[in-house]
Length: 90
Image: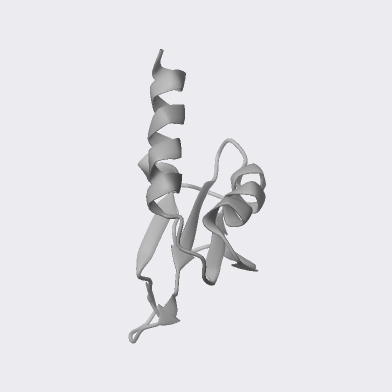
């Protein structure tokens, strides 16, 4: 039941994120440490981004896809995105 609800929530998120644009995929190998990350590249849709980052994150990792991201200020530099879809949305 929980898996079905997670799947439905993910589908609702994907439907609301149907905007096309540069989606930046990021993987965090250790979900408890968001300072260590790997940028997976830019994608034309959130679906394409999720197809790459979800398996790359594996069981112990985390992922996110951000729409129209730009680098903010500060140390460490923060990404500012119009919208973010991540493993925390499940």
